[in-house]
Image (cartoon, rainbow, N blue to C red; front, top):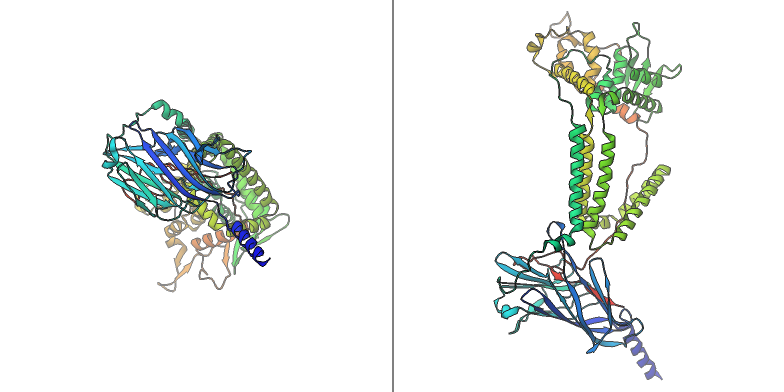
Length: 640
């Protein structure tokens, strides 16, 4: 009884440990003088009815990538299939980049044990023709087999004893792209041969390369019709991309070019009716914290508010000036929002201040309502069409890059899924930004290696996307242009800038500039801050704002405006400094007028794809240039 139990245990152990494996993979290759290739593959397998139940399948790529993302299709025809020397039924199915041969019958299961399959097929367009030599770069086994291969070998015959003239002979083993060389050369009188010296693990393969003098094989003539048929998508992509560039260039040339600049003349006053905030907006074509700072200082120099700098905060006090100087629409709107009702004071720190943010929003919207249409054209419709065309370019370009790995249906599903995911992510971010950001950050942290690998695997696609995105952003900027009126105002602003930063006083004196008085300095100081020229403007008036005292020839009293006080004892700038107040106040209002929110990040799903076919066409007479998985042939297989 114990002996029977022991034998049963050994039998079960053997069954559990049994492995489906390819014990031998031998490929006999006959190259005809016209370039046609006849291949006989003899594949010995051990079937255990796990994956190999009815038979095996063999994948063969028929689509290969060439230079400049062109495509080349090769011929492929199965001549015969046998199992254990007897004819075996088979059927083929088209794949995205080739053909799959199913060997066996759906209703018949294989007995367990060894089986020998022999597949005979013919193919063409697999040779490389180069200056000075021809080449056969061939993936013998393919790198897509799900089973280990204990031994792989190949024997290659060239026409008219061409094997005797082979000038270079190399092979590579390992996973796709690897350059391991676990093989030995096994030539004979009939041809050249290779045999592996180490087991190939699942998805490893054997690739070989031989070079021989020209004339042994007749080169196949270039067929333009075949090339066009193989590369309709490539041609469409190229024409679409040219149309995309042409559309943008035409739109820019017709509608986006700036009017010519006028003659630059120094101006001693800002354009009539323009506030400092408006000058900043028109000069920079945008609103930001500089715009708000210039508006606050304009209110201060006109006497409507005073600015008191305390430790880590500013206090704005409302006043009623005696002569009530005119305010622009934006300044009126800002003043009304900063001091609503009977409010007389506003404290600003670097923490969010709703009142300041409301005033900033009203100032910016008023400026845009007043000047955007009068001074600028953004050609928004052309921008929109350009972005829409770029989406089509991205779709077609992605299809071109991955046409061997993705069907059109796969790509459509991917894009639709990504679009739905993006909309859901945006809704989720708006509804619960903190929770959404934490979840996204967690996903990024848990999968950064996968993201990095995705970027490595798809770097060409990433560069393509970045290029299209950069082109869109460039023409979005270029299509914005000033109107003739806007160009005239910008010329006047440029003239004011020229005067403010010019050091050639003697030349400008000929133009009869105004006297340098404190009133003139204060009047234009907000404009100087709006243009980022407060230092140059203050230096122009150094002799006026630093007045010598009567009791000492070496002592001076610094200028102290009545609209600004510095009560921060820890601050080095106890005296007035235009540069300091501009920088410090701008940083404070910038921080205080931004709504606090969780940091936003985004993540997109990724997919991975692989192809058993290779796009490499040459190994360039060097063992370091070829790799496993390169060349023609290839594919892989499995059981069914």
